[in-house]
Amino acid sequence: MSGFSEEILDEINKLVFDENDDGLLDKIVQVDRNDLGQISKVILDFEGDNIPDIAVYFEYDSLGRVITKSLDTNLDNSINKIIKYQYDDNGNYTIFYDDNADGKTDFIEKTDDQGNVRIHDVRSKTQKFSEIIKDFVSELKSLKRK
Image 1 (cartoon, rainbow, N blue to C red):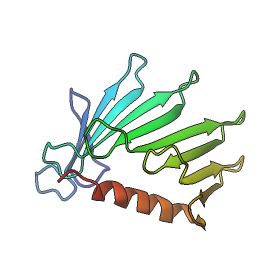
Image 2 (cartoon, rainbow, N blue to C red):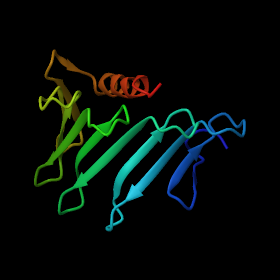
Image 3 (spheres, rainbow, N blue to C red):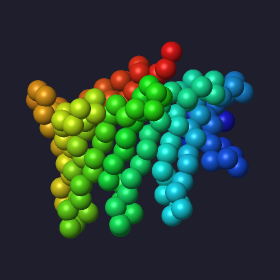
Image 4 (cartoon, helix red, strand yellow):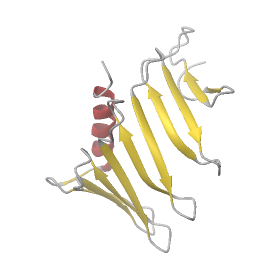
């Protein structure tokens, strides 16, 4: 079994990954669901060592769409990153990223009716979507609990 294409969902809502076919866990993702079956919490273990690295909490609107993802990247029971979603009547979304949970938007992601995505970095300049996401994922991994 290699990569994320071969996932195993066990009876306790945990995804485990063996990315290099060595028989050892490389990543673990534990998923909790609310009474409606929506994902309410995800615990990420980037090392596969059963020591959680990041917790992500989800909130939904009445249509079942994600409206908030709150991240505890230190696992100290305090939220230190917030991602908020707003939707228009056509289902297009705008995402507001608050990189340090200070109540200020750091960058904004918008889609239009054609599915085009544009990122505006409120702190400096407009950047390519792939650069923002790559930086965000790298930062999350670097915040792993030591």
